[in-house]
Image 1 (cartoon, one colour):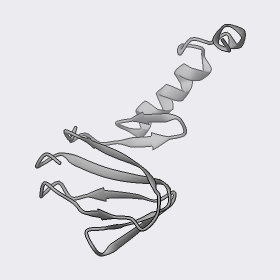
Image 2 (cartoon, rainbow, N blue to C red; image 1 turned 135 degrees about the vertical axis):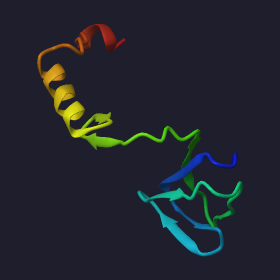
Image 3 (cartoon, rainbow, N blue to C red; image 1 turned 90 degrees about the vertical axis):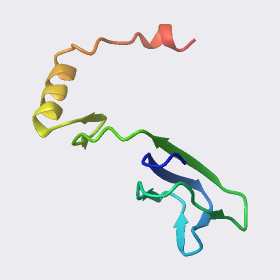
Image 4 (cartoon, one colour; image 1 turned 180 degrees about the vertical axis):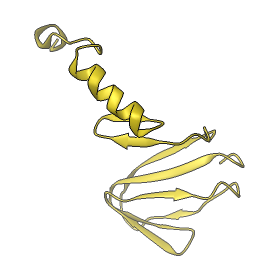
Length: 97
């Protein structure tokens, strides 16, 4: 893990022990402090987990429904845009394949 980057784990299946002390179970998510450059993960059985890491954006984050924006006002605007058709549409027959 690159020093200063954001790191999160999302457990999809099973359970793990993180850094020898924290148990993370299915459907849970853990986010790590930006300090440091490594973690340890132990599993006694098969697991499936999603590892998310990247350079932090250092901006406010607001999520609601399918939208992630920087403010409540932007979330409300996204819903207005979606409901007015500004996001476009998909033809279910054409995308079915």
